[in-house]
Image (cartoon, rainbow, N blue to C red; front, top):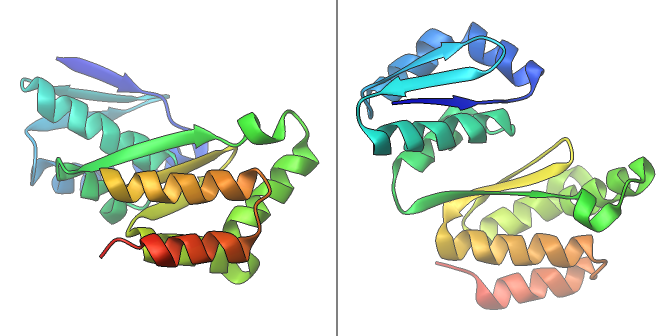
Length: 166
């Protein structure tokens, strides 16, 4: 079975440079091979291994480092990607403003959401990506979406603290 993943050019360059390391780490878990051209080709006999690897490559493409993307080897973990344009429209200024709301001063908001939800978050381009267990991702997404809709940070932090996942 062969699957293809299209990832941003700057992430393709990093993947090309680190392909041997990435292939070795993937092969520790799955019997697949990865080829990097303009897109990423994943080939293997086991359908599930190919699809799990595809999610790992997608996560890497959305800005996660290798080790965080490899959390997706665990079948309890999921990757969720959503577009900030749904909240900002086409205004570049508004998109930058919303990124800032999610990241916070010195990354504080993002760190608090990650801490209380037990998930990992990357803001890359026009997307927000979250890796974690299903319930953790759901909580993190709810917090991020509320921030994108204009909710006050203090209210979101209180909600996260009350509902934190241990």
